[in-house]
Image 1 (cartoon, rainbow, N blue to C red):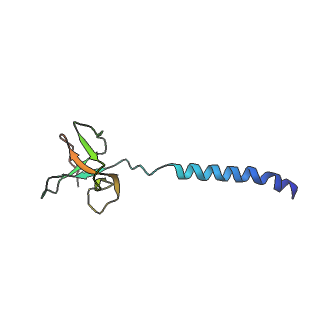
Image 2 (tube, rainbow, N blue to C red):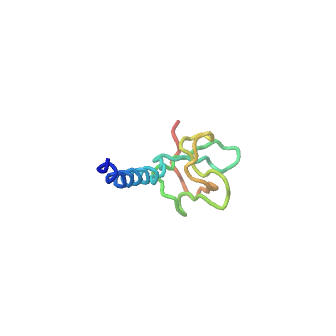
Image 3 (cartoon, helix red, strand yellow):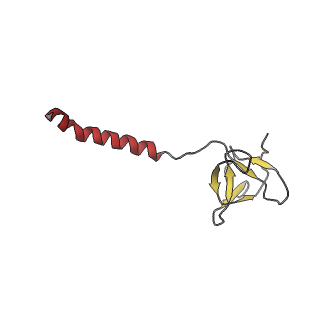
Length: 95
């Protein structure tokens, strides 16, 4: 019983460290899509390999909208929040 009692703090530390590492990794999908901001258009862009910037696109985070999605549809999960601003040519999403 004494042996078990001596090992208990080490086991608790190991378990706590494992849980902390498991919860520390954020869900970061590799694919992301955004809908064209022009009203009346249903064009989706594939932002997977596009770096946000002044020549591509930006997400204005001061506006409470969804900037990009995991799939090219409005019901998909949100990847980035903010208003999608298209600044240049972007690759189209293929259906």
